[in-house]
Length: 437
Image (cartoon, rainbow, N blue to C red; front, side, top):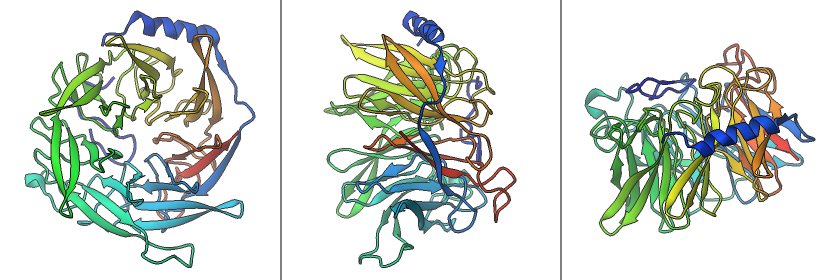
């Protein structure tokens, strides 16, 4: 488990930085009795292998779908500034278009968190470095940005059409935050919300809001984390809204046991009220949640931890709000791998209530896997849909999974695929994969 006060880590690229209930422990024993199932009749395909050239390499952010079924993502290897890409289905195959390549300058550098669509149909994201802020010397290559990508004004006649990037906010490296590395979320009024894992008065991260006024985006800090027992530290994931307009997110450290938290921001007349929904215990209850939460619409949230659990290899958990209180349960404890080998990203849920996710280096070959959790008779049954081998199929997914309306799953791996090509090392440049039912 990560030591208290140490900044969180990213497994590749760059260093960033409640007491378990009886219900949680009982759930673990139910799952142990239920056992796990081998992969069903799904089909796994690699739909793009990164080469380390113009297409980039080592994708980390969760993929985003548009209404036409096209995929959007980012690449973030430290040896290059990073890219934003589109994968478009055409005549039964997928064509990659690099929408934008960062210049390692004021335009941004290292888009770890992926991209999302805004109300105007254009793409928004964050970069970990770049921009105009120096943070008084804390940021050697800029303190990070929030950016917007817009498509060409006229219809593109070829497959390779670049988009135009505009930095809408440049972090200055003080109370406004440092090094954003997570995805963004919009509210119904068009305001943007996100987190930074550094910065703020205590240096352990903030929650920020960006609102558009007279053509300019203005930042408002909604919460500054302190890292003390009643608060979290180092938020590495994006946030989500519930149906009442409350925001929820995770921190990888802080809380009562210095093992991370789930937090809530509730809008009030005077601003936003922050509360800790759950403190991870660092043991069987999990430690270090790095992914965003998933909301089922009925008051239940689902998420993952990279560490903790029965084998210190991560967990899948559930939080339920009922009768004015929150109850916590561990739905699955990842079997023994390396420490903190569990899921790093978000889960996806289908209409039947099944959960899907990916682990970093669990699975049969310890190169990560894609899994499914199925609710059955009050418990959950685990199925491994694909075990990465570290070869052409990829290895070590950091991102979450994305589910389309047809039940197809999509995701990325940071390694595997092409080895030694262009800027790739012997571990490969990473892939984009698809699992069809």
